[in-house]
Length: 326
Image 1 (cartoon, rainbow, N blue to C red):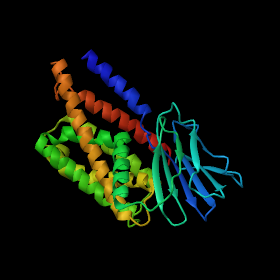
Image 2: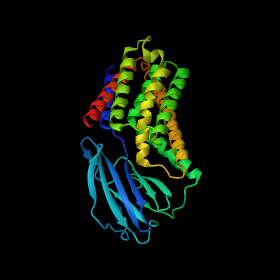
Image 3: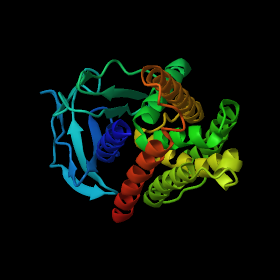
Image 4: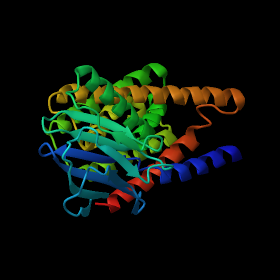
């Protein structure tokens, strides 16, 4: 029991500090052959932002000072660039990224609306713009599947929700249907939001997403077989899945969609999210299997309270933090 308590305390400490895994994003859009508009967006975490700076090669100049502002808990820089040779061969470096955690999503759009998407991180903080050509359908599918997988695997609130679904589903067969219901529901709202068919403010949605985890954690701790969640897990996962879809859409809005393949990119991103969910659930079962072999006292039942309290306390922290940011 002491070991379980230590695991619980460590998990709460680590997760409460690691909630906001939103990547920074750098978007460069050509206004003509040699003029470019830049949007650099960095999330504010725990009241401060990561000290990142977008740097460019000597052939690139900045004709006017940057404008800076804070919107929706993000630090935003807008500025213009001029490069007579055009985009091709432009060297981009994110200073401050080496040795740091987190990614920067780079999106480059030329004046023909051709798009390049790349991910910069501590191992690869530099990027040289290649000859820009229109993305093939295969390029679009691969790029957005990878982005979808990456997003779900760093989106801790979505992962905690999926972890809670493992408990409320009760059996592996029902777990498959429960996660499928969650998938179908958030796919619907993801498509509606990403195509601007249905638009709602994101900050309240993020707070309710945290509340959905608190609700499921409470249901897991009570373990009342006649409760709504345990009796109808598919209904519950589908209902909350509608909200999570808006959360996925907000991230996709920051990444952007190619103008000529919006639907394909949207579906590919959603497939990536589902692949990420399956990988996460498989990892959960693998870890549980190994722990149960190493420590015989570990069962789904002995982990019920540590799991529910960890998820509930962390999600409560996120909920109040998100409500305070309105």
